[in-house]
Length: 223
Image 1 (cartoon, rainbow, N blue to C red):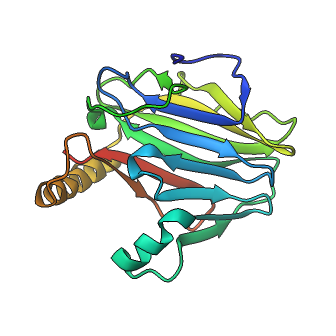
Image 2 (cartoon, rainbow, N blue to C red; image 1 turned 135 degrees about the horizontal axis):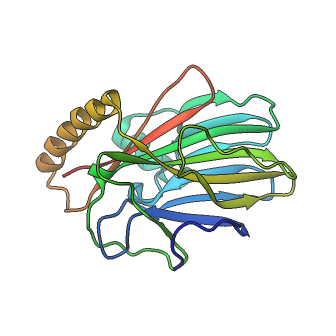
């Protein structure tokens, strides 16, 4: 396993990361990868391979169930399509496609069978939120670091034949609106977890629908 914050990220075919420590309070493991068609994907281990976000070479994007889970999803949720939401990316040379938000309050100690190549990133201070910003650029284009955070740093990249997906990690103070959303949603999740007798350490993610292309996803602890 490697630890936080490398200033010259190596090019990889797959980037796996988690916020926190393998033997302490932490997030779930996230995965960023590409394929030979120049498509980029993002998924989270806590959802057990059931859901992923896809960012295709032609600008089409979607989030929804994986092919393997579609039959089960059809029975459980009566869905007709595995895609919950679709949108398009602008044709910019550098565009932010996703932000993964992990508040300090949602880090928990739990046992998981972590892949060996997970990169563990230093958790945010209390009262803050860890933000993993994913940018897509052309092959020879490097994204600018976001303003407003002195902690922002490029921590990894995944290359395909024509595009590069960059992961930028930063910490930000938890503002009032996000803090309220976290409290409301965690209360709901705690009730659902108790009713369903879910095991300790169960995680949840909330995908935010937006009118533009820039999507956010919030990771929460169910208990």
